[in-house]
Image (cartoon, rainbow, N blue to C red):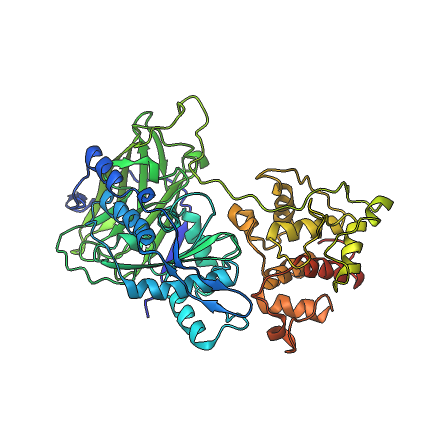
Length: 560
């Protein structure tokens, strides 16, 4: 098993050291040994590897994900090539061979991992639990895939989703690394839409050769991609000392954002183990603005994260705290000191990154706000407003919906409508068996306890809900990952939110136990306890409302 990575993450304060010196003189400046790409060659590869060429139907066989049946499906090979093309583009601009290949068997296995990620509503984890009715053979294959792959949530906006998954994999911030270390490799990172396996940026491993890509979605919500970068069978021979990302020389700002981590992958044959003596300076040449890992001024601070003990090369990750934009033509100089070569001689790195835009920004970034480079977040499907302000009134008590008559939840739905907690849809239906997203459940819960939120239409309608949730330390995924807001909530996640709202910040099985012990909820099957609760399954509108009613009637008076 791969050695568990050890991360030293620190904001180093105090006096800085201008240079590294040994007893016999200054540290030697080490060159990367990689080819430096030109703007013209990068633009040519951008056209060659354009993922928009690989459109059309995503699936030859659509994955089946339901409460009683699971099939892996099959992604169309041309669609998968969009992801492969994007991966090879990132390799090329980093000075590496752009000759990755799709491996059919890897992609078949990755499909199982994608299906189980979708089956648990994107609760990204390398150790998924077995959903109800998923047979053992399917589960073991799916779990094996999830355990050894990178898991990515992809929003529902236009474009090849396998290519978008590659973009998200490469677009991690330094805080993705902090969260993964905090939660551990076998835990769910709340708010995470990117869970990596092994060293970060494994796509840039010099000996990576064959990759696998899986893709699945559930109920037209977000898609879940599994990326397998474990095959290191390439026999390409080339010498390098380190791999910087973004790379030295010309580099397309189209695929690098200001809030993204900069990374240097050190060759284990060129450098000895790195220590917290590493010191980094990042200088913007246009105005000589400098960020360092030892700045006492927050606006000049570099966050630092070191991944040590990796057999594929140790990694230095750093990120400027306040870099608001990257302009066309910006040149940044990176200087790293405090390193030692494999022969134990002092060494430093120094190189320039020259950003340019292949697709020119539509506004002047010097004078106007930079347009968002992120894809739009899908809006949640929100029930129509029938006029309820949140307070009980006679008008709301007369509302009837055609699909709740005779339904087990009829009286509870009427209770929710009367108390201004829920509304129906414009077609005259309530849809009690439709499943709810995290933001919809949060809206119900806050309304039930008279915590009114401004639920206006548009992509920002749930912002006030999440402000409240964060202030009260509820474990909501959508606080940091907007795409997670409109994704379907699991019964386990619901239990965690309710437990926290009742003053008991518990997770997973402990949260479920808490709800059962307080008689706030019951299981879904004849099995008792946690197994019968079916924590990885979704939550319907009727169930959500019934649970909130139970909570109020069994003693919860206020939200903690």
